[in-house]
Image (cartoon, rainbow, N blue to C red; front, side):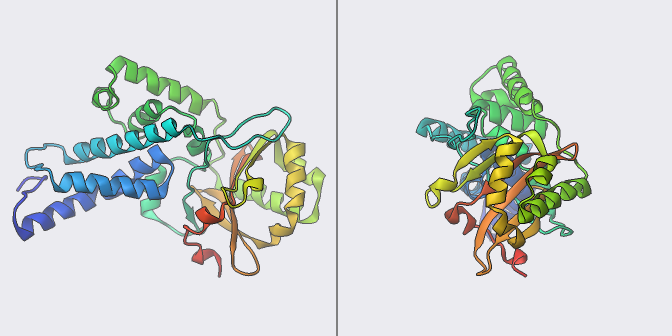
Length: 313
């Protein structure tokens, strides 16, 4: 039996299942980077499994490539459905009227010092949630071309038929997406430096020290908060150090409940109230020692989907 296996009998089915499971971490990483949603990524993998299960792949020379194409096509359809729904962006509040993405992507959480090999694969060598936020602004074709080529080294010639473009047009789409991504300053990769800035932010918030808050914030810092339908008043986009610092002071009473967390591999926090209820997940982007972005998920429905038991100790 070759890599793709046979289709008959219990042993054949077990072998095919085992082959799919070997590719699952990679496929889940592709789906997460395309969709920015853990639940939708898992749904895409389930769809891919069903297609794989009813297809004779015995003559497929590169099963991993075939499965990647199947998952990517499922994700592309989901992205196009999102675009067709024309969801409203996070509403801006601030002097420049800057708007946010339609939704904040799902963060990947773990405690500092805890190793999670599958999460490392899903992060694809990125640091923080900032890249995922930028990708929410890409068109479906741009996002698929960029993710497959730049993050997973799939040749343009293989991506082009998937999105219905020529190889040259696909290259242009990926280049356009790359320029949008690279327009954002590269975040600090040193976790210790990130944590110093985040700890300074919470310390200043706790004491209401506006001067110290402004000092740790980049002058053009952006705060995006997604409260969902349940907390619509918490769905805002704030810009500028003074505006964000003022909001942080208002939230200062929650600072003692912030638990350190890694959010997409970068220093962040999970805020859990005295009653054990999750109040928010906070992702920070730190550039040259200053906080340039704060992304907050306060939507109770989304928070309920996370297993935060590790942060309640």
